[in-house]
Length: 482
Figure 1 (cartoon, rainbow, N blue to C red):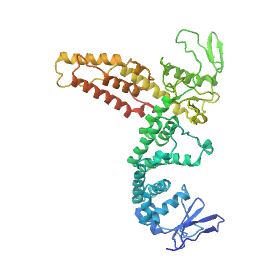
Figure 2: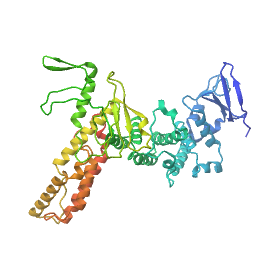
Figure 3: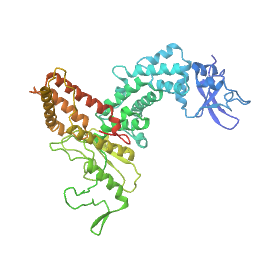
Figure 4: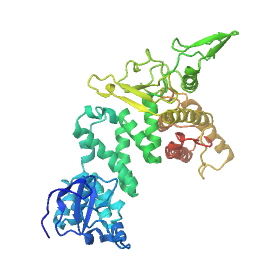
């Protein structure tokens, strides 16, 4: 194979492009331009594996065929030169060189580039190989993915406008997490996608910032399996709106507005200015769906709206080390984005320095999800899930006793401290608390043992049903019924 011919060149049209140091071969037969880098490679290599290039080269060519000279290269729009260089390395590499990428010493960025470009240009065999190598890499124990990114305690999601203030290696390692999810979605590789979603679910279970990252990814990629858990975590850990100090006159007292809201009295009524109307509606909605904190100390961040001491201060709950956040919106513009300003009681936490943007659509989804989950709990609380009686419980009298015992258990345990200490929208948490109470439940005088097993299995199915449909609670239109 001929040696590369590096150097800069200026085309007849006046463009100043640079020949790639490694992949501009003197005996190359196809010149490609990516960004401002020229690659001169072999058509026979690009035509392998039934690729898109092979189809393109088979089309009739005009008199001035592209790719024959530096003045008239084939331009690949939307590509990055360093990624295409990774792809060419795989295309020209010898088997021992490829073997390196199937070891723990593999370059993950290189593998991602190979898989993505192979998918785009239909190099199916190379794509399959790269995805398998990635899957094997992420499944290593201990996971190189989880060990290379910040722990949930210290991870800070940084919007692009603030990303320059953090360590580049930390950002790159975290970006690999999102790149892998995007790649798995693009290539339709379910095993890799499920693995990465499970990683992210593990991380976001103890971090608002990872939950926000998961929520953003689920919206961008339309990942329904991730949307529900991500929105649920943000809903539990964040204050979704900045509630107005609005008295809805539910107790018979006169209605009032906060000092920040402009109003005037006309004919004995209250008139609200146009500028504050939207915030008033959202504030009223939050007041309607967000319950008061349960006595005895609810976990911090478990409510949708907690009245802050100031409009910019974050809300915290005394005696709890859980992370909480407040979202504030600009009252001057109905289309402006809200932002999450998070805080933590831990003095070493960095999460209180970053504001997380949230779109109006996300805000509505979170509020709607809270409302729908609360309705679901109200339905479950009043209607115990029915179970199939065991065949051994055949007499009418015995079935009645089993049913009555189950109804009494459900009525008692839906009001126990373990359940009431959780947010009303925490349907899964409350159902799991009831399941624990059921496992500790003593002997029931009129409930057959086989029926107890059936009732426990039924409760588990209810929990799985909510988990499987969790994303629908936060979708536009939502569930048709609870």
